[in-house]
Figure 1 (cartoon, rainbow, N blue to C red):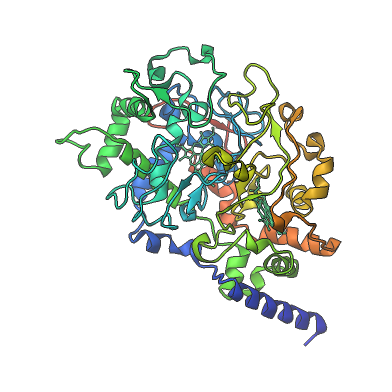
Figure 2 (cartoon, rainbow, N blue to C red; figure 1 turned 135 degrees about the vertical axis):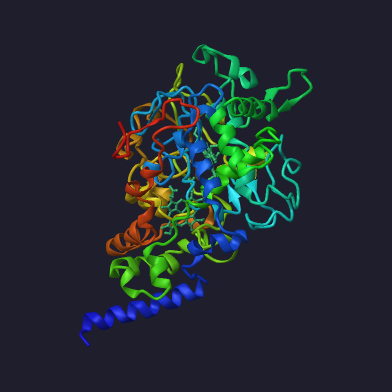
Length: 483
Ligand code: HEC
Ligand code: HEC
């Protein structure tokens, strides 16, 4: 055997051992139907796809899932910080409108996440998103009541989650709440006082609920013959002769079913783990050994047990990402940020109210991360390599963060929040990798974790030419076929 070949064999042996030790099998991608305990319902998923792209789901007909979770970017965001309602109907670099607070994470593979969102605020207390034996836990007003244990319909965390975006004023609903459906000129509405999760008062003033918004969305769907027909083909209670109403659990099931089809977890590292040693380059293999070994990544970007091989422990840590906020001014932002200068994001503290949780965010699941145009919870970096360089030596790198150099959009360059210093102990000291080692690690994260099926060439085909409401389809700038 040639020396180089021998070295490769050696590498393969080491990597196989490391993956085995981490309990990584590379089989999670093919497990979705087994985990659901049934085949995916293609018809239901296709209805979910139409809802994903039809702005009729927003009370002012100006946004829905696809406006932020874009097929051109692995069903993640085209922007550093999401732009929700009152946008210009473009999805891509030229999207404009008021910004929310965080970057939209990719919805691909989220079927396997036991905790959703950057601060994990939607979760399966069972530790398994496919198991509702303890119900699903959401912040108020849903709390632990809306999605109770062993509900016969809301069986997966994503079915529950799909109840939320349509009620978010800054994302989808707009600011007139349930009255929005009747509001003919929403763009004139004043919108400077909304926080994520803000809810509208009930008409009788008896409290705050998201339900009136859902009812308004349902009224739209029920008033649309195409939707009634499509739902009727799947749910007998909607079809004649019953002719009953479309309800929100049906919407949630359709959207979740579509998300179940967005499993892209067949990356080189998976194929290697299943025995194909040629699936990875030797640089990727060396990077993987660092990831699972001395660089210590896998302790947070975990693959065993409840992490479902998603490269996240689904726990919250202080990673000290630079805090960037939109410039002040009408139309530039519609969420009031945290902190005395309203230029911070307190992360998990928003949920728990505990200062000990300040700046804690979920370890990002890293599959297909290289499809993202920006990185971290606020898109503070636009190159994976820069983000990783920062992440490997945050204490030092954060002293010289420069948003212009990092490539963020102009409106995000002028309000930089305080530097975060109390880092997670695992990130507190530099990783000290040689230049070659760093390159290998980047190679692994960039290519070794990428499922080619998540590419825009593949996903842009999911954009429908027409949607049931007849409203214009959003303009996906990143999709080759887009206008
Ligand atoms: C305005 C942009 C926007 C729209 C529209 C939107 N989302 Fe999101 N989505 C986000 C952001 C931002 C987050 C992360 C929020 C956070 O962590 O606070 C997110 C998180 C998620 C997650 C969790 C992913 C993870 O990594 O935990 C899922 C699933 C999801 N959205 C599904 C949907 C669905 C389904 C719709 C449509 C019904 C939708 N989203 C509409 C911006 C959007
Ligand atoms: C202490 C736990 C921890 C360790 C150790 C860790 N990370 Fe992270 N990582 C995080 C957290 C938390 C985030 C999200 C931070 C944020 O957005 O505020 C993150 C984000 C990332 C991102 C950006 C992902 C995205 O969605 O934009 C990459 C890439 C990454 N980590 C790679 C690595 C690599 C490679 C290593 C090993 C050298 C590593 N991480 C070690 C916790 C950790």
